[in-house]
Length: 237
Image 1: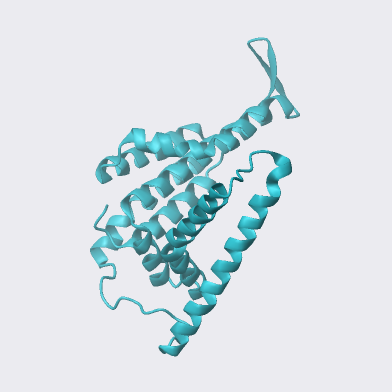
Image 2 (image 1 turned 90 degrees about the horizontal axis):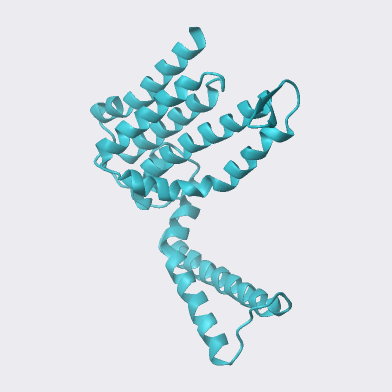
């Protein structure tokens, strides 16, 4: 997993997610099959389940939204523990939780086995728009610098005895954000002019070697192919 070229992992993750989203929500067993596939990938990549579970908590707001659907849905209703629940709402909640969780876990497995730099290289090899990959490259390169600028500005504010903590003191925070934006904009202008003076023609240099081999494409196709087989079985049975 870690040695595969980034473009094959990105495409495999995308195709797997498309198959999961296209699966009818009533085919409950199919989602169990997808979960088994992801567990196998996690085992092959050596990614701990605890690590995945902790970071998958990012979807909790959507899960909380899904909890309300059985109560707010219309149509046929069923009783459970003295509560009247909508059948369509139950399926809707299951649809959000199951597909959202599988998509988040698949993305986490991609992030766990691929560095940020390799992700950008993979997107570039997949002919992702150059503007997008260049913005992502500069964001990755200068994010630490901007965070350091923000930290210094906060220290300067604290050293002057001003530490806004309440809503009516939000002006100081807004001024800091505006100042940070101006610094980032000016730095971007200087970097762009320096790049143009060195022959920049609208595209960053690309690595010449290191593309995916046929064997790597075949290995990466196992996950989406297995997911497609489960989806076809669910639809045709």
